Amino acid sequence: MLRFPHDAHTHTTYSDGIGEIAENIAAAEEKGLRLLGITDHSHYFEPGTLSRYVREVRYWGEDAGLTILAGVEGNITAGGVDVPDFMAEKLDYVIASVHEWLERPEEYVELVKLALEDDNVDVIGHFGASFPYIGFPSADGLEEILELAEKNGKAFEISSRYRVPDIDFIRECIRRGIKLTFASDAHYPPAVGSVSWSEKVFRKAGGKKEDLLFGEFL
Ligand SMILES: [Zn+2]
Ligand SMILES: [Zn+2]
Image (tube, rainbow, N blue to C red; front, side, top):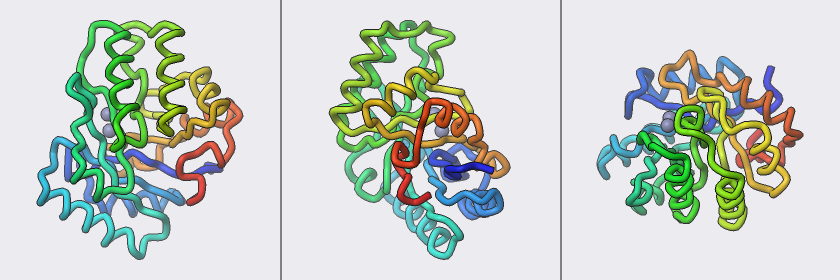
């Protein structure tokens, strides 16, 4: 049983997930979560579908047995994060993640810095998922990231899917007051709430409820 039962990163049929919003919520209720985020990929939305998406999340969230939030997962590219104002305004929060293939960790750091400077972004998704393949950034690069996140009030998710960030990074977030969330990154309902790795590393790093972005709901 989780002490901080929440999952702030799940996908549905509004992007590349295979479950309906209602099915993700039912799975979250079954697992005893207290908060669930529906966060489909930003590039699947146009203004019309975004409104329908948010309406549907609110509809199913209304009498759910837990808090349901509407978000998206945006893409960080060299041109910035693909979450325009009209989108962010309708949502409870925005995750921004690097999805493109990069050659060097320095490029990754530069992209994440763009997201940390973007007012529409709340959470950095699966930070460092590709480091085992492209290499790890320097201590200075990580320091820049942490300083910027602290200054601009951005959070990081702890991704059970990719098992990132590492515990040292999470400890630094906690020490600096940078908030954290748990993320399954589920693309089908049975994986909703699969965040035990997130909680394990968070608690090993000394994390408390007040270190979680959505701690007030838990
Ligand atoms: Zn992602
Ligand atoms: Zn995702």
